[in-house]
Length: 125
Image 1 (cartoon, rainbow, N blue to C red):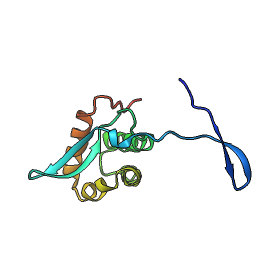
Image 2 (cartoon, rainbow, N blue to C red):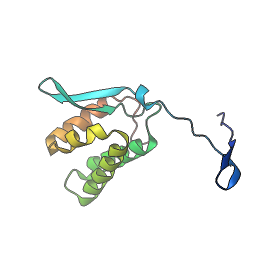
Image 3 (cartoon, rainbow, N blue to C red):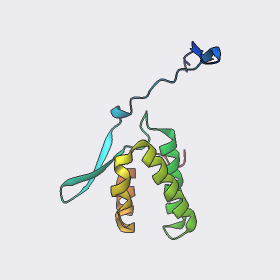
């Protein structure tokens, strides 16, 4: 893997080496549309694709694992849901309110579809 080198910059404390983080093209992510009555309510990125924020993948994987092992009734699932929604809000804020308004059955449908159309997603990875 080729790693970029640090650049020298002038800061308030003098010259220092700063690593320039390349900005990922999040706008290039493939998005999956979710809706009702023919209207798109929100979009979520396809899981596992290159460029997807690692925090979002981690938060979803934790939530997905909790749902698979304990269902929606355990407090650990509620904590994992809260963490996932917080991370989602940081990355795709337009999805949070519509997603949060769904009931348990609708959330199950969203998760099932999201995972099915995300062939790169591996919850064990």
